[in-house]
Image 1 (tube, rainbow, N blue to C red):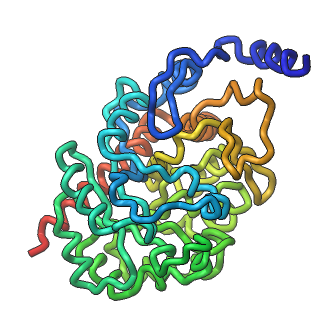
Image 2 (image 1 turned 90 degrees about the vertical axis):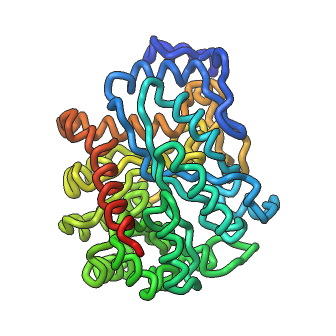
Length: 379
């Protein structure tokens, strides 16, 4: 009876929202596109999302390059391990068409940054497949690679920069976070930064430390990179992993005044974080990103203070505190929930369509062109 009352209340609040899943379109792995998602798009996003999109943060890699078999213990250790079924390029195309109907979508893609993958093969796969579609990629790199290896990757078709990551320092099957407290320079060393700076290459940086972007070491080292290597196109992923407002205040505000530092908004659902970024960083330095295939997941995120919880309707290990079936029946895709959070912040600030279009497309395309021009000059 309680669930029936909840369903009735939710339908009264959302009269256009259907709770019948309707015909499903398979997206990827566990995930499907349902009637509730179509209705969400039509009600909240169709009239707001621009006609052209540039996804500046998406993972694409053929599953054949995965060399590690994930154990149940590994899935329990890190929630993303349960969502790690990577999408190949054809799947990504299909999902873009399905999630963004009528939109022209381009992207900047990279493989999965972990030593459970055959990194070189995955990089070459993107270099071969993405230029056929007018898409670009970043090479996943290891900190042990010498300068000549970095330069070689920058010569490959469609590659405009690199994707470093602290998990690439060394392999530890027991935990993903062995190196989370590393210095940025432990996984993006100076000899690589010198090459990247020389070629005006792109770097998408996922910051280390449990304290996220606001950790004093991150602030200090990002400022050092900007000072010593100013020609690098430096993009801080996920607003520096700022998924809650306190983390955003601690991390974004100290770096907000640097006009040459960019941020992507991938994986951020919190409208307060989006709003703070728009107010202090501004629409000219924010790039749209999906972080798919992770965000094909169905559900919603809730936050309190410095913590957050991911809700979903699938019985993942991390999904321990489930909501009622009637509430779960209202879930849409995380991709759409992230867009709704971003839209809410834009509307609260009265952001116009021109600025919205810059974030979704214009900023990334300008940076794509800048990186491409420089890399064409490599001998």
